[in-house]
Length: 441
RNA sequence: GCGAGUGUAGCCAAGUGGUUAAGGCAGAGGAUUGUGGAUCCUCCAUGCGUGGGUUCGACUCCCAUCACUCGCCCCA
Image (cartoon, rainbow, N blue to C red; front, top):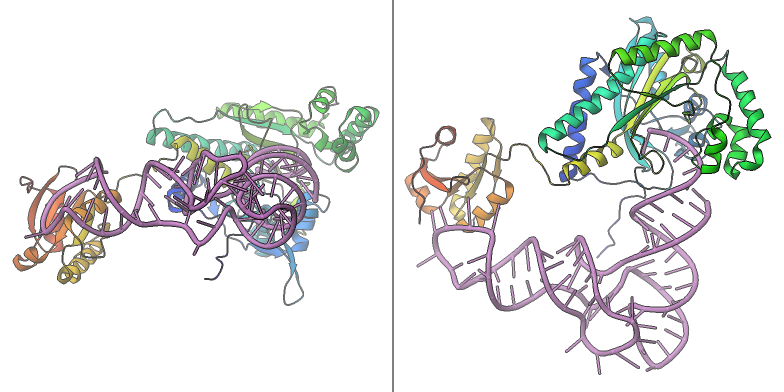
């Protein structure tokens, strides 16, 4: 026998019991998007490597060492997308969507790829849901998008609680910060670097490297000694415009009743962010593990950096695996399925299989969900099977029934059964308002 | 890329140098000629991730390798 081939490292199959968590989150996300007037966009899973290098930043780890990059048969440099924003911006420019009504608000969902060591909350192929807003520099765009993310989680958690009262759900915290813009960030970078260099010996090795390559990231270090030094690090002095913008975003969030915390040390790993950045994290879990459950911010330079007209923009993304973990933990892994199967149909004798098959299909064509027990078997086997499938009714079709042109319709909940004419219409009617007869011996 | 842990059946596992690799769950068949998750009986690893080595003898000790898990880096 040939060796079976397993899934590739960092990839996984999402099997039927788990998929309900995904369908739930996607349904609730779609609902939130439509209420916030975001349209779906679908873009390719691979792009020119150059797009990501220019968009995300050539110095970032994502581009430097985590991309799935290859040369295709035509000699093109191709990369599997490590995130969604660059591709959406590319589509925005390619189809000249900036010529249409602005702001343009879109959302996407799909697989992303990063060559990393897999661990909790991180896969090589993972899935994101994200949004982008193009063409609005207004603080309302920031606040609207953040409120959307929070409403999504609010709605998701409400639905989980409805399905499983008392479900164990984490408290989610919105953290926001401003990174300034071209006018105020360079000076901040310099003053940060000066501070770090003068305290360099107290920082961990990674931070000593980061303070030269990406000083803002030092603020995000979780090493206790670094955190202590960071407490005294200079904070951004926003230019007047950035200050006004940040104040307005916070005011709007308050007006929207979105609780948030200002975290002056919050930074992001991608180069393109300006002004507002935010993260949603479960309270108490932010110190360890991959717990961030939504992150994004404003990127006012990216569109022009990628060759488009100057276009302010805002976006975020959430990792679906991380959300699915939350959902499944809250539902406690029990497949808390909604409304089970209405009917199973099973032949009791080989000569009844065609009729049973036909009946099942006729009922399905009438709009009923029906499980067909494929092989003729004894009643007790069918009963067991039907119960296991979660069926409400079981229609049994054997030699006796065949002779009379009837089926035995058993109500598995009431443990009662009756004879019904062997037609889809009669069965539907009997299930809609059955007149139960006493159970057979 | 670095560090740690774990690999025995579909799942959970006992076994820590000695003969035939416990047990439970799930599954299959039967007791039961057409009526429910019960009970009882039977079946279900020529093999302990893979490849070497040590030994009279290896699931057990050693080395390598692979996979998974967790952490670091980084990120959703």
